[in-house]
Image 1 (cartoon, one colour):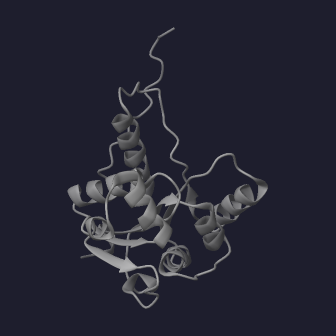
Image 2 (cartoon, helix red, strand yellow):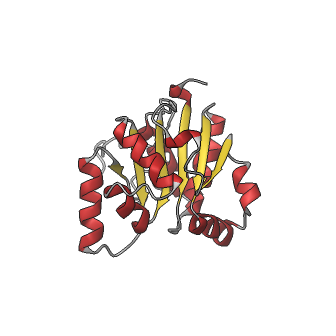
Length: 193
């Protein structure tokens, strides 16, 4: 598998596990090889929010790693990957990434993504934001990460929560550089109003 077909997916303990699961399923649909690393809190969130256990979660990816496995392939810049997404990204993980604390496989993989100048999309989840959150988002952005809170778009008039989630996932895929991504584009008002 070539670098252009591999995506690393990280899951942390923030709410929004549905984004990771939809991303994994959509990436598989699009023929991407996925490498999954979930923090212990991320696994708990997936179970609590979606009812999936660790085994079911791991089966959504081509390769799954334990967060403590800092010797895994994705911990090295020599592992060629197209991009990485952390979905959802907790403020704790954001802080670790923003400050280069490669203290587990997820934050190490993010650090590798940044040092290799690859796309890193952080789907940060927290509200309201305090100054530390904002400064960490700025630091991560200055290092090349894309901070992408999964905020819904309503201009395309979604009919269901699934529509909102799917469009957000497509937007994340586009930010990752996945050319087959199909987010709803704003077409302008076209004389409405």
